[in-house]
Image 1 (tube, rainbow, N blue to C red):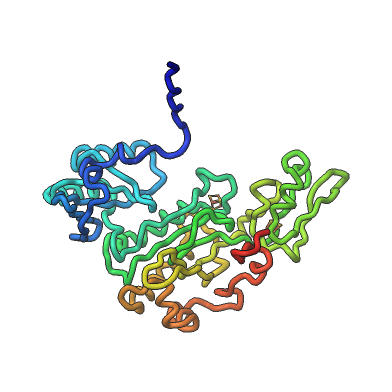
Image 2 (tube, protein in one colour):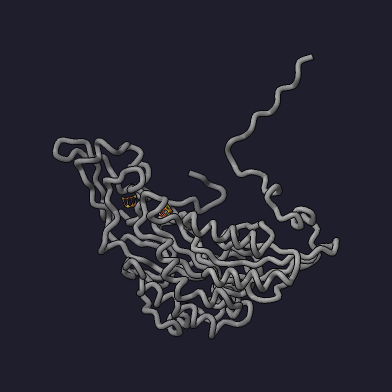
Length: 358
Ligand code: SF4
Ligand code: SF4
């Protein structure tokens, strides 16, 4: 009788994570009784079987060189139990089976420059998009903004003194593969793309670029006898979507690509429904390597939120309670008619309805 064919290995997708779990986590999978937080940065899980696990969370710089990763692995071997995992906000967690191992592990981590924290009502590690290292279209370096900001905010990562948890994110183009957050920093192009007509015919699929524009502002055109493109600048919303399929549509500009701050987004359903964030500051200079103007606005919003919000109010709950006029008064941010409103064209141009798709 013919043997059944062995199923071929699938060489894409993530592997089954259970093979990498700390043995106690694998043993008690789905059988946890409760957990608490003995101190900021430490979680204590108790299983129905009586097993206990302490998890120590440390911040990383996310984009790490091999020497830093080796240091973290050495700490895992010497002070933890050789198992680590990364959280979705790029923190690293070490699991140990005894409370006696927690304090030496924290000393080893902090002694090597990794702050321990990020649990409970703290400022989380900032989620960021790929930036100059991995993506070909950024207008700024999202990871660089994170480094500069966390240098100022890491004490709020190590404590749990915020009214509720505060998620931050940075994104390096307006297409924004990042996501929303309580406070988000997003690049903002303010002028339509300048077209390098000499390159368009060789580099770009013109129909693809025309189709890419969300407001139909791009048309095919002949320029100096060569096939190229033109932009109706009155329609253009400076989104930058034409740049990835056609780099000659130069949207990045040292002067006119700015940064904007959005607040009040959350994905969680806890206590109130999820909310979209709204823009509260625009036109901040894209000023590497420390982005001081952005840091000043973010720390100001955080300071006022920390002082004024009630316990367990997320940024959006706090703003909902005090109202937008009071938000701008308290933070002393200048208000203009371009802020906080939703983009009016969205209704006609985006898939705003669950019933009609186009
Ligand atoms: S936000 Fe934009 S530029 Fe940045 S990594 Fe994502 S797609 Fe690339
Ligand atoms: S920047 Fe956006 S709106 Fe402007 S032409 Fe390009 S795709 Fe269209």
